[in-house]
Image (cartoon, rainbow, N blue to C red):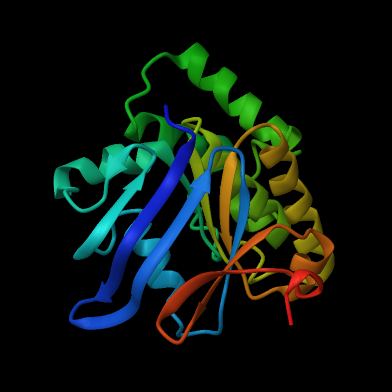
Length: 230
């Protein structure tokens, strides 16, 4: 496993025929916590979708978790997604089953068979997000913050090499956002690499880290103001 988790060179991000971002050159290394910022419509979601195989990479080169994005075939997308943990703004939990069954569903879908191992894994990931006692609850019985914790636990099930969090605090109030952020910080300290798209600049100030910005069809690293050369 290389130290580089994600690398794009001269990449262009398209949504169908529309050019969204051009000449993207970025690298994310193992263990980093990286923010992706930019106004709505500047291409954050399209960029994320390209990374997990929803949009094809049509030009330039890109590798994510040792998989070549340019030659990615439809049938390889499930394999790619097993190496990634994706956390969405709207949780995407299944409301007709409890927390544990939500997680079992994902494990079965990704090829797990051994019941004992599955139960152990579920306990582990729920423990990591502080939800160990809530495995029998249904999503609608949980607060937004608790649902997002479960969604993060779900993203951890297959020990992903990279977690893509797309506006994970977008639907949460400021206090809950901080709690969810603490969970993500802890997971990062345990060695998981995280790329998090966010609008929440308060979080950036509170937890400063490497930041990529989408603006004017470009994606570039922004340096904290105080370090910029005048």
